[in-house]
Length: 61
Image (cartoon, rainbow, N blue to C red; front, side, top):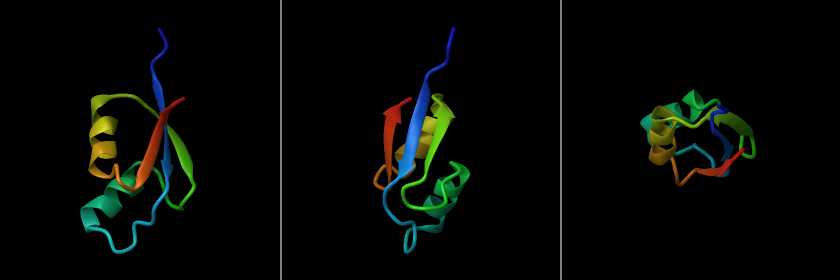
């Protein structure tokens, strides 16, 4: 059974944001605006996305 994957793209800058949000974006593997990473869809990743939902765009891969 194939696990679902999520495509996460950074669409807004983290500069000027809370340190916790900056570290969350970094932990997702995002560095530059427009960069996209593919992560496994699990509750941990979903929680990280929820914390920075105003900075990222998410779609199923």
